[in-house]
Image (cartoon, rainbow, N blue to C red; front, side, top):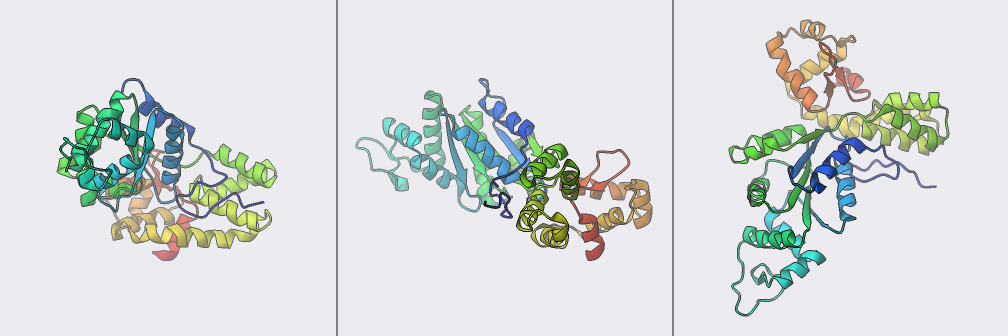
Length: 343
């Protein structure tokens, strides 16, 4: 039998732990009769399942005949790419033809006699969206790993126009906290602040236990031990499962390899993106086992007003949990050991 786990980022594994509450929240908002929310942004640390969640939502909406779903690459000019994807879609192509939209300027179709060709991608998209609206259909655009690029700025500005004109277009994006924050800080794109952000937290522990118990046919106690090693981190769930499967179900024999995978695939990159002060705070958290903020501050010599911005940054990045008042803990498995080793 094929290994049901995967080490490939963004790829939907054969076995995963669902996030039904957050997935249903987005789908219910997008499919509501009265449109109140046309954008969601999924954020989280690397390996938290952002792309998998986005893919699952897009697959569910593709199954609905009232929806057209397209995926855009943030590294390309987004408006021309969007127009090309719409023209390639069977439903939209039919609407373009019936509306006699001349898109020959963009290399699509043929020129239409007596009709002035459209030469602006934004205008052409608006015309297509108007036809979608008349036909009772909606468009979902997905963009994975959004960043503050010129392409993204132009697209976001156009999307804001589509929304103002009450067109049936919806955006589902993913991105790291710092990239989304930088994009939102653009003065011309303040509407992004109003976009609900789904920050992916650890997976449900009971669901992980049940998955491991079923897949490996082990006792609830052993499955709970495995789940504890992941701390609910989706990539860790996949890595531990993958290595355990290849080791005939013996997870104790692959713990060293498990730690190495987490370090090389994720933690090295996360660590490289932290500032020196971020790392100092992380080292304090790693050293003070109680997790008590006052003890951490005392250990690294920081006052509250200096410490708090870095604490909040690490929480928003998804590295640290601050849910218990006065305490902070790492959310990632074996990250404490990684910090001590690499500081």
